[in-house]
Structures are given as structure tokens and as C-alpha cells.
Image 1 (tube, each protein chain N blue to C red):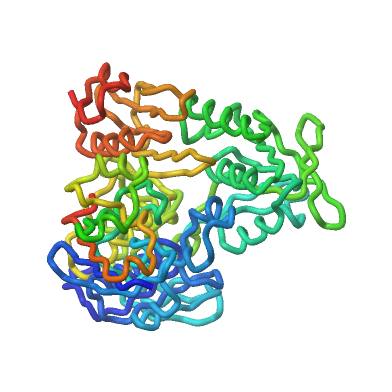
Image 2: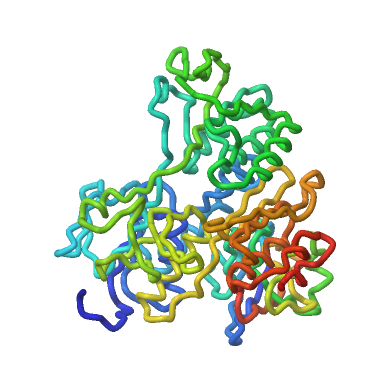
Length: 414
Length: 106
């Protein structure tokens, strides 16, 4: 361990990665009174922006580029935050406290924040390189996807996760035909319980989406370099004009790993978002981080996680007490549905349904004895809001009351 | 365009010109005003953009949707004047609006 240093508000901070985490860290540092130079390096041509609307409001044309941006363009200059766009971090010299960028530049730092995010996992199958086969991760991806959608266009979505379902809903709103191909026997297999999978499948089917479950995708077929269909392992070919591959993401932790920092499906950090090197922090999708509520380490991909860790690093650098630990939470908008999830169903031994999915207003509670570990709430803000508090405070619940939707969420504590 | 004054819990004031069509929350976030968090970016999913609207402005800031009402019902430090600032759209009619922030958004 290096010597403990008093916070130096004039230290030079380099943030590698200009997504929601990196951009927010720069903003919180200035908000909390950091006066030293801040350099923010991003591999996209854009200043930090919000990704969640890319599959939702933005795709449907309900949000413009300006509304996506985290801060107005002039904010960076006004706040002495140097933006280097179109570059990523490639090598780290921890001894010299220098990071080398893909554009050849080398930056000195007092503190480095790795916020390099995650990249879309792609399918290593024939035809994956055809035009029209894409992921949805960046604004550029979203532009390409939007141009491919419209009345009569056929979109094949590989992967029935949240991104896939959100894109399906938006594509239907734009008049496109949509088929979702999922390897597992149900959508959201890795992230949600069966009741929720069933509900979302039915809801999408009723709005014209077709599902191919337990489907093996063998190849993408094309003509003139452009995708024309998806070949399944049962031999069928589903014709399409575009393919979205939404099968998860891989943390961009290579630079950290090469520099000898511990990585376990992401850069390992502590509750201050600091790595074992006291001069190096990591935040956002790229981190393997402690979850105090659950007593374990995990990699989260969410905006609330990016914001929480951005606050952690900013607090640590200016010498403020760290933010209150948060229960992980997530949200998804599809059609007129608002799904809000609090917690993660670690160690749960029972699933409890509150309300009737047929009414499109219900919640699924994951319980460990009489403790709530996670809640998935569809159009049910009280269940989400109260559920989050019950998880955080480890408040035992009266399970019979919780199962009865006529009893207010304010009265379910045991 | 509307001039909006955001008052932090400790009394610090920030007066900002916010463009029509933006939400009161966006006006704060884009100008790095502390005290409004907006985890969800305006999807009415998190209740971390909670503000108190001065009584004189209540009629002009629009009605609460059932979703907003329901989220606020379970937020902390809620009062009659509580709103989620992501649900208040800025227009000329809101010029001079004053919103105050709760002690904490969590």
C-alpha cells in the first residue's frame, strides 16, 4: 500500500471512457469542488450521452440528440474539462502514472479513472460481418438501426434480453415486422423469473412480435454483402432486412489486465471504486464491484451503477464521505409498460406473485425467508419503491400481506 | 425560455435559463445543479428528481400523472407541493419558477 494522501483538489485526473460513468465522474468532481485538470477520453465521436433512450424514446423519434447529451457542449470548456474524442486507452504505465491512447498520445495522471465500459458480445458465426447485422450499444449503432426500420421492414433480433425486447417494442411502433430468436426456452431467462418471461412474451405476441424460442442461430445469409436472412439449426431460413444481436456484453478490461490489475469479469474495485493501485479507480460497466447489500462481488450494467460509482470516485478524490450504498436497480420501458426492478435475486428461496399479470399491473417478489431480496414490478411503482426500501433495510415482511394486493405496500412489513 | 430558480436544501440558489420543451429536471442536470439526481434520465422510474414547487406556481406546472403520483407516494420527505421535476415541461409560462429541493433524494 502506498502512503495515505490527503485529498488534493488540484490533482490531475484522467478519465478513460466517456460514457455515463466517465462523464458523470467529471461532472461530480467539479460539483464537489475539484479544481485540478480533468481530461476525459472517449472512443466515440460524441461527448457523453445517455444510452438508455437509444432502444426506446430515441429510436421511436421521441428524443433528439441534444436531449440525449449528459451536459451541453459548452459545459466542458466552461468547466475546464478537456475532452479527447475518438480515442481509447491502450496501455498503462503504473510506475510513471501514464496512460497511452490509441491515437498515440500519452497522458500523465495523478489519478486515473478507468470507465471503458463494455462492448456488445457478437456471434462468431458465418455472415456475422454482413451489412445489416449489428449490435445496439452506441448512438452510431442506433442511427444505423433506425435507418433500417420502418413499415414493412423485417427485423430479426437475436437474444431475448431487455435490449432485444425494448428494440422489438420500438420497431413495432415504427411499423416493422419483428421476430425474436432466443437460445433458451424463454426470454429474459438469465435475468427474470418465469412468470415475467411468460408475461412479456404474451404482451409482445399480442402486439405482433413473433418468437422462436430454444432456437439455434447457425448463420446469417446475405446477398451483395447485405444480410437477407437468419439460418436456424433446424434448417429454416427466416428472411429479414436487418439483424440486432443482443446477447450480452463483455467488459473492456484488457488495458487494466495487461497492467497487472486484478480482473474477474471486469476490473476489481472496492466500495470507493478504487483498484488495488491507490492511484487507479474504475467505474461503471467495466467493474467487478462489491454489493454490500448482498455481501458479494458482481458486475452490474446499469445507469444507477455508473452514477453511484462516479459519485464514489469523486467523493474519494475530494475527501468527502462516500455516497450511501444503493440497492441495485434497473428499469425498462416497452409499449405502455414500465418495468422497474430493485435488487438481485441472490439467495432467494421463494418467488411470490402480487397482483394479476393479466391486468398488466403486478409485481414478482424474490424472498429469502421473510426478507425481500429482489422485486420486479410491472406498472407497479408502490411495489418497486417500497420493495427497494425493504431490501435496503432488510425489513422482514408478512408474506401473507405481501401476497394480497388489496393491502397497501405501506402495511406489508411484519 | 424560462428563468428557473433551484434552491438547494441548504438555501443555495441557482438561477438558470432553461429552454422550452426541456423538463425542469433537465435544466438542473445539464447545468450541474446539485441536489437533483435523476438516475433514470427522466423516465419517471426513480423519484430522484423530487422538488417542492412554490405554491404560487402550482396551477402552471401541470397535473401529476397517476405514475408520478404513485412514485411520490413512496418517496421520502413528501409534501403537498412535491413533484418529480422530470415531469414538469418548461415553457414561457414558467418564467420565474422557483423549486426547492429535499434534504436527500434517497
